[in-house]
Length: 425
Image (cartoon, rainbow, N blue to C red):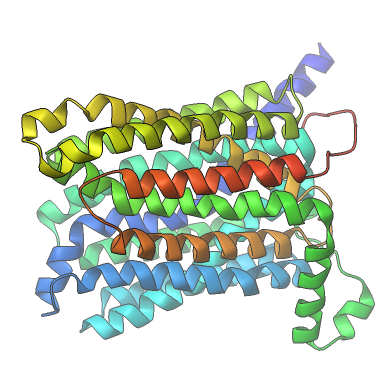
Protein backbone atom coordinates (compact mmCIF):
# COMPACT_ATOMS: atom_id res chain seq x y z
CA UNK A 1 0.00 0.00 0.00
CA UNK A 2 2.81 2.39 0.90
CA UNK A 3 4.57 1.67 -2.40
CA UNK A 4 1.32 2.41 -4.25
CA UNK A 5 0.99 5.76 -2.50
CA UNK A 6 4.62 6.56 -3.30
CA UNK A 7 4.05 5.73 -6.97
CA UNK A 8 0.91 7.89 -7.12
CA UNK A 9 2.76 10.74 -5.42
CA UNK A 10 5.62 10.43 -7.91
CA UNK A 11 3.18 10.46 -10.84
CA UNK A 12 1.46 13.60 -9.52
CA UNK A 13 4.86 15.22 -9.02
CA UNK A 14 5.80 14.39 -12.61
CA UNK A 15 2.53 15.79 -13.96
CA UNK A 16 2.97 19.02 -12.00
CA UNK A 17 6.59 19.34 -13.17
CA UNK A 18 5.64 18.86 -16.83
CA UNK A 19 2.77 21.37 -16.57
CA UNK A 20 5.10 23.84 -14.85
CA UNK A 21 7.74 23.52 -17.55
CA UNK A 22 5.04 23.64 -20.21
CA UNK A 23 3.78 26.97 -18.89
CA UNK A 24 7.20 28.50 -19.58
CA UNK A 25 7.57 26.92 -23.03
CA UNK A 26 4.08 28.17 -23.92
CA UNK A 27 5.35 31.76 -23.90
CA UNK A 28 6.65 31.24 -27.46
CA UNK A 29 3.37 30.11 -29.11
CA UNK A 30 1.37 32.56 -26.99
CA UNK A 31 3.59 35.34 -28.34
CA UNK A 32 3.30 34.36 -32.00
CA UNK A 33 0.19 32.34 -32.82
CA UNK A 34 -2.27 34.45 -30.83
CA UNK A 35 -1.62 37.64 -32.81
CA UNK A 36 -1.34 36.20 -36.33
CA UNK A 37 -4.98 37.11 -37.14
CA UNK A 38 -4.20 40.70 -36.09
CA UNK A 39 -1.45 41.43 -38.63
CA UNK A 40 -3.71 43.24 -41.15
CA UNK A 41 -5.34 45.30 -38.37
CA UNK A 42 -1.91 46.26 -37.00
CA UNK A 43 -0.75 47.46 -40.41
CA UNK A 44 -3.89 49.54 -40.90
CA UNK A 45 -3.87 51.09 -37.43
CA UNK A 46 -0.16 51.98 -37.58
CA UNK A 47 -0.43 53.26 -41.19
CA UNK A 48 2.22 50.76 -42.31
CA UNK A 49 2.74 49.10 -45.67
CA UNK A 50 0.94 45.87 -46.46
CA UNK A 51 3.04 42.91 -45.35
CA UNK A 52 5.13 44.94 -42.91
CA UNK A 53 3.41 43.27 -39.96
CA UNK A 54 4.97 39.95 -40.94
CA UNK A 55 8.38 41.43 -40.14
CA UNK A 56 7.40 41.37 -36.47
CA UNK A 57 7.63 37.57 -36.79
CA UNK A 58 11.11 37.89 -38.27
CA UNK A 59 12.08 40.14 -35.36
CA UNK A 60 10.74 37.51 -32.98
CA UNK A 61 12.70 34.64 -34.55
CA UNK A 62 15.91 36.69 -34.60
CA UNK A 63 15.46 37.80 -30.99
CA UNK A 64 14.84 34.27 -29.73
CA UNK A 65 17.84 32.90 -31.64
CA UNK A 66 20.21 35.50 -30.16
CA UNK A 67 18.64 35.45 -26.70
CA UNK A 68 19.17 31.73 -26.25
CA UNK A 69 22.92 32.15 -26.69
CA UNK A 70 22.98 34.29 -23.55
CA UNK A 71 20.25 32.51 -21.60
CA UNK A 72 21.94 29.11 -21.40
CA UNK A 73 25.32 30.17 -19.97
CA UNK A 74 23.62 32.53 -17.51
CA UNK A 75 21.44 29.70 -16.22
CA UNK A 76 24.43 27.40 -15.86
CA UNK A 77 26.41 30.08 -14.05
CA UNK A 78 23.75 31.60 -11.77
CA UNK A 79 21.15 28.83 -11.58
CA UNK A 80 17.82 28.39 -13.35
CA UNK A 81 15.52 30.51 -11.22
CA UNK A 82 16.94 34.04 -11.25
CA UNK A 83 17.64 34.33 -15.02
CA UNK A 84 14.22 32.81 -15.73
CA UNK A 85 12.52 35.30 -13.39
CA UNK A 86 14.33 38.28 -14.92
CA UNK A 87 13.66 37.02 -18.44
CA UNK A 88 9.91 36.59 -17.96
CA UNK A 89 9.57 39.99 -16.25
CA UNK A 90 11.40 41.88 -19.01
CA UNK A 91 9.42 39.93 -21.61
CA UNK A 92 6.22 41.14 -19.94
CA UNK A 93 7.43 44.75 -19.85
CA UNK A 94 8.49 44.60 -23.51
CA UNK A 95 5.04 43.24 -24.41
CA UNK A 96 3.54 46.32 -22.75
CA UNK A 97 5.84 48.36 -24.99
CA UNK A 98 4.39 46.51 -28.00
CA UNK A 99 0.85 47.31 -26.84
CA UNK A 100 1.71 51.01 -26.58
CA UNK A 101 3.76 51.27 -29.79
CA UNK A 102 2.80 54.34 -31.86
CA UNK A 103 4.41 53.07 -35.08
CA UNK A 104 5.71 49.92 -36.73
CA UNK A 105 9.43 50.61 -36.01
CA UNK A 106 8.63 50.87 -32.29
CA UNK A 107 6.75 47.59 -32.52
CA UNK A 108 9.74 45.93 -34.22
CA UNK A 109 12.03 47.14 -31.44
CA UNK A 110 9.86 45.96 -28.56
CA UNK A 111 9.16 42.61 -30.27
CA UNK A 112 12.90 42.07 -30.60
CA UNK A 113 13.41 42.82 -26.89
CA UNK A 114 10.47 40.61 -25.89
CA UNK A 115 11.81 37.74 -28.00
CA UNK A 116 15.34 38.10 -26.62
CA UNK A 117 14.14 37.61 -23.04
CA UNK A 118 11.42 35.09 -23.92
CA UNK A 119 14.33 32.87 -24.99
CA UNK A 120 15.03 32.27 -21.29
CA UNK A 121 11.68 30.50 -20.99
CA UNK A 122 12.60 28.18 -23.88
CA UNK A 123 16.00 27.16 -22.51
CA UNK A 124 14.97 26.69 -18.88
CA UNK A 125 12.52 23.75 -19.29
CA UNK A 126 14.98 21.64 -21.29
CA UNK A 127 17.79 22.38 -18.83
CA UNK A 128 15.53 21.64 -15.84
CA UNK A 129 14.43 18.32 -17.34
CA UNK A 130 18.07 17.35 -17.87
CA UNK A 131 18.73 18.24 -14.22
CA UNK A 132 16.23 15.64 -13.02
CA UNK A 133 16.40 12.98 -15.76
CA UNK A 134 18.46 11.78 -18.71
CA UNK A 135 18.38 9.09 -21.37
CA UNK A 136 15.01 7.37 -21.79
CA UNK A 137 13.56 9.09 -18.72
CA UNK A 138 14.53 12.48 -20.08
CA UNK A 139 13.09 11.67 -23.50
CA UNK A 140 9.79 10.61 -21.89
CA UNK A 141 9.57 13.89 -19.97
CA UNK A 142 10.36 15.85 -23.14
CA UNK A 143 7.63 13.93 -24.99
CA UNK A 144 5.15 14.83 -22.25
CA UNK A 145 6.33 18.44 -22.47
CA UNK A 146 5.61 18.38 -26.21
CA UNK A 147 1.98 17.53 -25.38
CA UNK A 148 1.59 20.72 -23.34
CA UNK A 149 3.65 22.70 -25.85
CA UNK A 150 1.54 21.49 -28.77
CA UNK A 151 -1.88 22.29 -27.33
CA UNK A 152 -1.24 26.05 -27.14
CA UNK A 153 -0.74 26.59 -30.92
CA UNK A 154 -4.06 24.82 -31.50
CA UNK A 155 -5.94 27.23 -29.24
CA UNK A 156 -4.00 30.50 -29.60
CA UNK A 157 -5.15 31.59 -33.11
CA UNK A 158 -8.80 30.95 -32.23
CA UNK A 159 -8.46 32.90 -28.98
CA UNK A 160 -6.74 35.75 -30.82
CA UNK A 161 -9.49 35.82 -33.44
CA UNK A 162 -12.23 35.97 -30.80
CA UNK A 163 -10.49 38.84 -28.99
CA UNK A 164 -10.19 40.76 -32.27
CA UNK A 165 -13.93 40.43 -32.83
CA UNK A 166 -14.56 42.78 -29.92
CA UNK A 167 -11.29 44.54 -29.03
CA UNK A 168 -8.18 46.15 -30.50
CA UNK A 169 -5.09 44.23 -31.54
CA UNK A 170 -3.27 45.99 -28.70
CA UNK A 171 -5.24 43.89 -26.21
CA UNK A 172 -3.39 40.82 -27.50
CA UNK A 173 -0.07 42.29 -26.38
CA UNK A 174 -1.58 43.22 -23.01
CA UNK A 175 -2.59 39.56 -22.75
CA UNK A 176 1.01 38.53 -23.50
CA UNK A 177 2.22 40.90 -20.77
CA UNK A 178 -0.24 39.39 -18.30
CA UNK A 179 0.95 35.88 -19.17
CA UNK A 180 4.56 37.01 -18.73
CA UNK A 181 3.85 38.32 -15.22
CA UNK A 182 1.90 35.15 -14.43
CA UNK A 183 4.85 33.00 -15.59
CA UNK A 184 7.18 35.03 -13.37
CA UNK A 185 5.14 33.98 -10.33
CA UNK A 186 5.52 30.33 -11.35
CA UNK A 187 9.31 30.55 -11.05
CA UNK A 188 8.82 30.08 -7.30
CA UNK A 189 7.80 26.45 -7.93
CA UNK A 190 10.81 25.58 -10.11
CA UNK A 191 12.43 22.72 -8.14
CA UNK A 192 15.37 23.92 -6.09
CA UNK A 193 17.61 21.12 -7.29
CA UNK A 194 17.37 22.64 -10.77
CA UNK A 195 18.39 26.10 -9.60
CA UNK A 196 21.64 25.30 -7.84
CA UNK A 197 24.83 26.69 -9.26
CA UNK A 198 26.60 23.81 -11.01
CA UNK A 199 29.80 25.64 -11.81
CA UNK A 200 32.90 25.60 -9.71
CA UNK A 201 34.45 28.56 -7.91
CA UNK A 202 37.18 29.05 -10.50
CA UNK A 203 34.59 29.61 -13.19
CA UNK A 204 33.05 32.41 -11.14
CA UNK A 205 36.34 34.31 -11.05
CA UNK A 206 36.69 34.30 -14.85
CA UNK A 207 35.65 37.13 -17.11
CA UNK A 208 32.03 36.40 -17.95
CA UNK A 209 32.59 36.37 -21.73
CA UNK A 210 35.61 34.08 -21.43
CA UNK A 211 33.54 31.85 -19.18
CA UNK A 212 30.70 31.67 -21.69
CA UNK A 213 33.09 30.94 -24.56
CA UNK A 214 34.74 28.16 -22.56
CA UNK A 215 31.36 26.66 -21.73
CA UNK A 216 30.34 26.60 -25.39
CA UNK A 217 33.66 25.01 -26.33
CA UNK A 218 33.16 22.31 -23.69
CA UNK A 219 29.68 21.59 -25.02
CA UNK A 220 30.94 21.27 -28.60
CA UNK A 221 33.62 18.80 -27.51
CA UNK A 222 30.99 16.39 -26.24
CA UNK A 223 30.56 13.59 -28.78
CA UNK A 224 26.91 13.02 -27.88
CA UNK A 225 26.04 16.67 -28.39
CA UNK A 226 27.93 16.95 -31.69
CA UNK A 227 25.82 14.28 -33.37
CA UNK A 228 22.49 14.30 -31.56
CA UNK A 229 22.62 18.09 -31.26
CA UNK A 230 22.77 18.39 -35.05
CA UNK A 231 19.64 16.26 -35.36
CA UNK A 232 18.01 18.62 -32.87
CA UNK A 233 19.10 21.71 -34.82
CA UNK A 234 17.91 20.30 -38.15
CA UNK A 235 14.38 20.13 -36.73
CA UNK A 236 14.20 23.84 -37.52
CA UNK A 237 14.18 23.08 -41.25
CA UNK A 238 10.98 21.04 -40.92
CA UNK A 239 9.18 23.43 -38.58
CA UNK A 240 9.80 26.70 -40.39
CA UNK A 241 9.69 25.33 -43.95
CA UNK A 242 6.32 23.75 -43.26
CA UNK A 243 4.91 26.89 -41.65
CA UNK A 244 6.15 29.00 -44.57
CA UNK A 245 5.05 26.77 -47.45
CA UNK A 246 1.87 25.06 -46.26
CA UNK A 247 -0.55 28.03 -46.61
CA UNK A 248 0.47 28.60 -50.23
CA UNK A 249 0.26 24.91 -51.10
CA UNK A 250 -3.15 24.23 -49.60
CA UNK A 251 -4.92 27.57 -50.01
CA UNK A 252 -3.64 28.63 -53.45
CA UNK A 253 -2.99 25.27 -55.11
CA UNK A 254 -5.86 23.23 -53.63
CA UNK A 255 -8.29 26.10 -53.07
CA UNK A 256 -8.82 25.62 -49.33
CA UNK A 257 -10.41 28.53 -47.49
CA UNK A 258 -8.58 29.96 -44.46
CA UNK A 259 -11.07 28.14 -42.21
CA UNK A 260 -10.51 24.83 -44.01
CA UNK A 261 -6.76 25.31 -43.84
CA UNK A 262 -7.07 26.07 -40.12
CA UNK A 263 -8.89 22.77 -39.61
CA UNK A 264 -6.23 20.91 -41.62
CA UNK A 265 -3.45 22.64 -39.66
CA UNK A 266 -5.13 21.76 -36.37
CA UNK A 267 -5.66 18.13 -37.37
CA UNK A 268 -2.02 17.83 -38.42
CA UNK A 269 -0.85 19.39 -35.17
CA UNK A 270 -3.10 17.02 -33.20
CA UNK A 271 -1.59 13.98 -34.95
CA UNK A 272 1.92 15.26 -34.27
CA UNK A 273 1.08 15.73 -30.58
CA UNK A 274 -0.35 12.22 -30.50
CA UNK A 275 2.88 10.80 -31.94
CA UNK A 276 4.95 12.44 -29.20
CA UNK A 277 2.85 10.50 -26.69
CA UNK A 278 3.29 7.29 -28.67
CA UNK A 279 7.01 7.99 -28.46
CA UNK A 280 6.76 8.31 -24.67
CA UNK A 281 5.09 4.88 -24.48
CA UNK A 282 7.63 3.26 -26.81
CA UNK A 283 10.47 4.59 -24.66
CA UNK A 284 9.38 2.18 -21.93
CA UNK A 285 10.28 -0.71 -24.24
CA UNK A 286 13.04 0.58 -26.55
CA UNK A 287 16.23 2.58 -26.16
CA UNK A 288 16.19 6.23 -27.15
CA UNK A 289 18.74 5.96 -29.94
CA UNK A 290 16.97 2.92 -31.44
CA UNK A 291 13.74 4.90 -31.76
CA UNK A 292 15.71 7.82 -33.16
CA UNK A 293 17.23 5.72 -35.94
CA UNK A 294 13.99 3.87 -36.66
CA UNK A 295 12.15 7.19 -37.02
CA UNK A 296 14.93 8.39 -39.32
CA UNK A 297 14.60 5.40 -41.67
CA UNK A 298 10.80 5.67 -41.74
CA UNK A 299 11.03 9.42 -42.26
CA UNK A 300 13.50 9.07 -45.14
CA UNK A 301 11.21 6.57 -46.88
CA UNK A 302 8.20 8.88 -46.42
CA UNK A 303 10.22 11.87 -47.64
CA UNK A 304 10.95 9.97 -50.86
CA UNK A 305 7.25 9.12 -51.24
CA UNK A 306 6.33 12.77 -50.62
CA UNK A 307 8.83 13.92 -53.25
CA UNK A 308 7.50 11.44 -55.83
CA UNK A 309 3.92 12.47 -55.08
CA UNK A 310 4.89 16.14 -55.37
CA UNK A 311 6.56 15.63 -58.75
CA UNK A 312 3.59 13.65 -60.10
CA UNK A 313 1.14 16.33 -58.99
CA UNK A 314 3.20 19.40 -59.88
CA UNK A 315 2.03 19.82 -63.49
CA UNK A 316 -1.63 19.54 -62.48
CA UNK A 317 -1.22 21.95 -59.57
CA UNK A 318 0.52 24.53 -61.75
CA UNK A 319 -1.64 24.33 -64.88
CA UNK A 320 -4.73 22.20 -64.19
CA UNK A 321 -8.26 23.20 -63.27
CA UNK A 322 -9.20 23.33 -59.60
CA UNK A 323 -11.26 20.13 -59.86
CA UNK A 324 -8.23 18.28 -61.25
CA UNK A 325 -5.96 19.73 -58.57
CA UNK A 326 -8.19 18.54 -55.75
CA UNK A 327 -7.74 14.94 -56.88
CA UNK A 328 -4.18 15.22 -55.59
CA UNK A 329 -5.19 16.67 -52.22
CA UNK A 330 -5.33 13.40 -50.29
CA UNK A 331 -2.06 11.96 -51.69
CA UNK A 332 -0.11 15.17 -51.00
CA UNK A 333 -1.69 15.96 -47.62
CA UNK A 334 -1.60 12.32 -46.51
CA UNK A 335 2.08 11.70 -47.26
CA UNK A 336 2.98 15.05 -45.70
CA UNK A 337 1.04 14.16 -42.54
CA UNK A 338 2.78 10.80 -42.13
CA UNK A 339 6.16 12.42 -42.79
CA UNK A 340 5.55 15.05 -40.11
CA UNK A 341 4.52 12.32 -37.66
CA UNK A 342 7.86 10.57 -38.23
CA UNK A 343 9.71 13.87 -37.92
CA UNK A 344 8.11 14.81 -34.61
CA UNK A 345 9.37 11.62 -32.96
CA UNK A 346 12.96 12.69 -33.63
CA UNK A 347 12.81 15.85 -31.51
CA UNK A 348 12.44 14.63 -27.90
CA UNK A 349 14.79 11.69 -28.47
CA UNK A 350 17.51 13.82 -30.09
CA UNK A 351 17.22 16.41 -27.32
CA UNK A 352 17.54 13.81 -24.56
CA UNK A 353 20.57 12.18 -26.21
CA UNK A 354 22.26 15.53 -26.91
CA UNK A 355 21.95 16.57 -23.25
CA UNK A 356 22.97 13.16 -21.88
CA UNK A 357 26.46 14.26 -20.75
CA UNK A 358 25.56 17.91 -20.12
CA UNK A 359 24.84 17.75 -16.41
CA UNK A 360 26.80 20.91 -15.55
CA UNK A 361 26.13 22.80 -18.78
CA UNK A 362 22.64 21.66 -19.77
CA UNK A 363 21.49 25.26 -20.16
CA UNK A 364 24.40 26.15 -22.43
CA UNK A 365 23.85 23.06 -24.57
CA UNK A 366 20.10 23.66 -24.84
CA UNK A 367 20.66 27.30 -25.77
CA UNK A 368 23.25 26.45 -28.44
CA UNK A 369 20.99 23.88 -30.09
CA UNK A 370 17.90 26.05 -29.71
CA UNK A 371 19.63 29.05 -31.24
CA UNK A 372 20.85 26.93 -34.13
CA UNK A 373 17.34 25.56 -34.64
CA UNK A 374 15.86 29.05 -34.91
CA UNK A 375 18.64 30.36 -37.15
CA UNK A 376 18.48 27.45 -39.59
CA UNK A 377 14.69 27.68 -39.48
CA UNK A 378 14.87 31.38 -40.30
CA UNK A 379 17.09 30.64 -43.31
CA UNK A 380 14.76 27.83 -44.39
CA UNK A 381 11.73 30.12 -44.31
CA UNK A 382 13.62 32.66 -46.44
CA UNK A 383 14.54 29.91 -48.90
CA UNK A 384 10.92 28.80 -49.16
CA UNK A 385 9.95 32.41 -49.83
CA UNK A 386 12.16 32.47 -52.93
CA UNK A 387 11.16 28.96 -54.09
CA UNK A 388 8.59 28.47 -56.89
CA UNK A 389 5.03 28.72 -55.58
CA UNK A 390 2.00 26.59 -56.38
CA UNK A 391 3.57 23.15 -55.88
CA UNK A 392 4.91 21.10 -52.98
CA UNK A 393 8.10 20.08 -54.82
CA UNK A 394 10.39 22.66 -53.12
CA UNK A 395 9.08 21.63 -49.69
CA UNK A 396 9.55 17.94 -50.54
CA UNK A 397 13.15 18.52 -51.68
CA UNK A 398 14.15 20.38 -48.52
CA UNK A 399 12.39 17.76 -46.36
CA UNK A 400 14.26 14.93 -48.08
CA UNK A 401 17.56 16.79 -47.64
CA UNK A 402 16.91 17.44 -43.93
CA UNK A 403 15.71 13.92 -43.17
CA UNK A 404 18.71 12.41 -44.96
CA UNK A 405 21.07 14.54 -42.88
CA UNK A 406 19.28 13.64 -39.66
CA UNK A 407 19.47 9.93 -40.42
CA UNK A 408 23.17 10.22 -41.31
CA UNK A 409 23.91 11.89 -37.95
CA UNK A 410 21.76 9.32 -36.12
CA UNK A 411 23.67 6.40 -37.69
CA UNK A 412 27.04 8.00 -36.99
CA UNK A 413 26.19 9.00 -33.40
CA UNK A 414 27.60 6.97 -30.49
CA UNK A 415 25.21 4.83 -28.48
CA UNK A 416 24.34 5.92 -24.96
CA UNK A 417 25.81 3.85 -22.10
CA UNK A 418 23.68 0.96 -20.91
CA UNK A 419 21.98 1.84 -17.64
CA UNK A 420 18.97 1.00 -15.57
CA UNK A 421 16.14 3.38 -16.38
CA UNK A 422 14.42 4.81 -13.34
CA UNK A 423 11.25 6.83 -13.09
CA UNK A 424 11.99 10.51 -13.57
CA UNK A 425 11.40 12.67 -10.53
